[in-house]
Length: 262
Ligand SMILES: Nc1ncnc2c1ncn2[C@@H]1O[C@H](COP(=O)(O)OP(=O)(O)OP(=O)(O)O)[C@@H](O)[C@H]1O
Image (cartoon, rainbow, N blue to C red; front, side):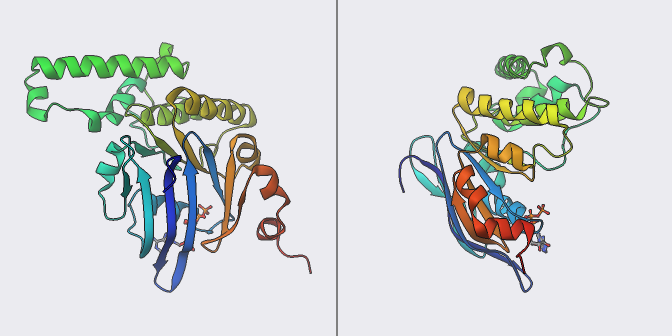
């Protein structure tokens, strides 16, 4: 596999009963690329995400991920927990924060996977655990500053505007060492101003954290604005792949979205 690729989905297929939700799909994402996956409702986008993170086990195909040391690993069959440790993290369509916790604690919860010291040492407040917690808290504060939310750090998630909750959800992906962040409909529920700010934030995350982004999004303005390349799918199959301009001009993509003219 080319060294520049971070993720390569090869001949991926999965069926639910008789329905082929993803059908022999291949695409790859380069380092520091913002890559969009688009398609009409039910096209198979979320299922592709779930096959990458191994929430679903694909029937066929490979999901090749380039590790930090350059080794290429097939993620099929790996545990979701181990995949997160490799630096492949995701957000969900519906914000999944704990409403009763403060914004900073929601970030720290996201970091539990990074804790090196065990539960027992943490419970006994051993020096190593305290040190680790201090470091994580400093990291979370840095992320809140990056997100321009430092002043709100101790406020509860409950009652915050949707735009703030979405930012925290994104911030949680930064608590590890993300190499590829998968965003599932990040603009859903946001107004135009919030969506514009989100576009800037996603590009900033790519640049500052030197990672790649894979996003599924129905807001075409956001997709066309921030993606380097886009893959359009329908009925689980690839329709087209290319730059935003190429995708916009593609006849098959237009037909999939607008319907075929009689
Ligand atoms: N767990 C499942 N069991 C059965 N069928 C499923 C399951 N998950 C997805 N499907 C079906 O697979 C197809 C693809 O669904 P998927 O949710 O991946 O589409 P999508 O492109 O993400 O749609 P949307 O844009 O509406 O979120 C649909 O026909 C859906 O009903």
